[in-house]
Length: 282
Length: 345
Ligand SMILES: Nc1ncnc2c1ncn2[C@@H]1O[C@H](COP(=O)(O)OP(=O)(O)OP(=O)(O)O)[C@@H](O)[C@H]1O
Ligand SMILES: [Mg+2]
Image: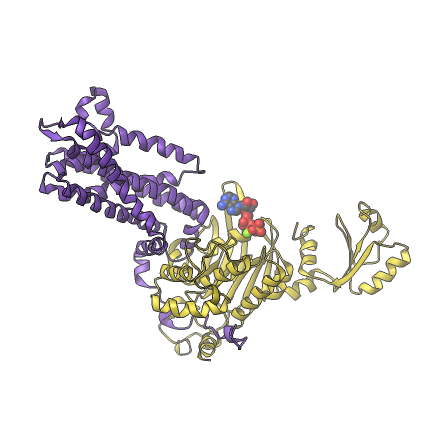
């Protein structure tokens, strides 16, 4: 400590100016979600390699399943009777699945840690921030990450000639919608979890969704009963949405898929916000 | 030192009694005395009650905290101190009764209240994934402060917390005392009108405690209103202008530390330690020596205005304790008198 032992005492720690006391408008107006993003940016700018790694997962799948299996399978027949190259068929599904995986991982493991161990949210809530700011901010962060991965994957798809329609550009917002739906529900589920064991349950749900959402083959290969079941899978709606865009097979069904995912995200966000309030503001 | 002058100005102006009147300098404002009459409180609780399901954590307590004072809640584990602090901090809904913080209702204006509070929770909740400086930065951002303002204050606060050389260190390896000081620095980033400290020194070694007390004392001198909970009677005596003694969700007594001791205890105490298991037997033979005799599992306390005189009387009776200590009365004795139990168990 430099010479003057009393130097510390001269700090102006008392609220002094009228301006400083006025509460900044954006915070009260709900701009708090942006602060949540800033916080995550501060954390991740140091561990950015973690972010890069998320990019490779779908690419690996694309190369192994899309190209490898595709060479064996050749073409598949889709709902409208068209023949489609298997790689072009499976790539959009892998995009949808990776959007789901990313959102689920971010919204369960990471959020659980912050909620139970890091006490990050407790600290945040002793400021003007609200639970809604946290919920929106965290979901938005997870979406932002997903957006980066999706963009990269779509570029790879385009480079490989797997995007057969200009509608393909809409695959990007579609991955965002999938991310939103899963992040919101993942976070909502996390607020009910008590221990790391509960995450086995997450895997137990995510893996079958990944495998049985008309990801790797058309819905028509199933018997009717399974077709109906598959339609309950949120990932199925995501897969169909993106696949329609990249293959250019638009139909009225799209609105159903979109509505399903929007509803899922809305319900998840609402539950998350309410649960955070109950958990943190008790 | 302009900072001191500035701070002092605020202290003298007795401002901030009514948040709606901020626009006018107080000495020009009709009806507000320059010296800040204590007619209005920063915190006002009436019948304040908190239930967790069936459990009564806070059982209808009344208290007021005036501007500029250091107000304490002294009580043992589970007394309801933290529950009360969290209600004041607008992060825990009030079950019953009324609570006004900075003139506002926490249920309605939570974010507005929190914007003007500094909070040091019982358990440190620093952001483990960020550095010391980043903790201050992001916390300031939560209040909507600009980076420039935060940087300026962070430099001062790091100096105040004696953490300048740890500015870019992660939080995790800091010592308990350092973490505590950082948490306090963080709580000051928004230049709060009221600082809430929940057991600021629990778990720290004596040296770290004294350093922290010194920092808190400086804040007090600058006119920051402090609310402190503690189960250390020495901490309460050192820091608090006024305190309430809390037990099982209720307030047992209220006053300045010295007043409470005068009111509820004698000037001095003679502590006698007898062989294990014989405290009560021996105490029975000391009848009449002290104004009040208290038998604890490990010792006997004689409350008297003259401990030396009492000591000679004890020897006259023919009792030879294993050890004898004579001391001044403390808040611990007040607590014992009021509840029949010790503060720290
Ligand atoms: N979130 C909660 N849910 C249920 N019960 C709670 C909760 N918080 C506190 N309690 C209970 O309320 C009572 C008062 O607790 P509180 O934490 O307010 O006491 P305290 O005076 O701060 O104690 P300590 O000195 O141990 O911190 C205790 O019986 C405690 O178990
Ligand atoms: Mg406590």
